[in-house]
Image (cartoon, rainbow, N blue to C red; front, side):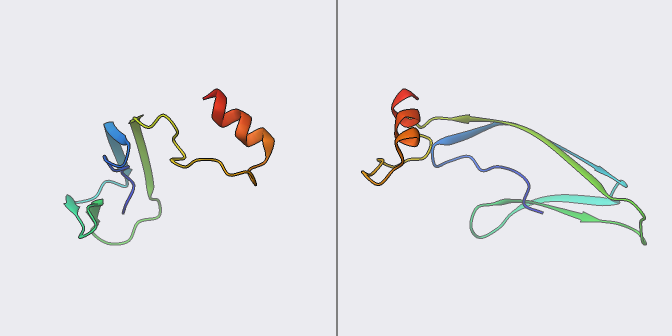
Length: 85
């Protein structure tokens, strides 16, 4: 499952926690070919409940998190919010 935010592209992952219940028998962390962190879980038998909870903190490093220059077609309310940020 891809549930972990990436570091890079103007953001830094400060903290990431994951809790899974019913508890998996084995759990592994791997990175796919695109650089995404994946969690693999193995369970014994069927389960009637699966809950996955993630908590994370990400630091954004871009001045404009949308990473673009507003065009004249941009609605005025959005342009004002971008200039104020």
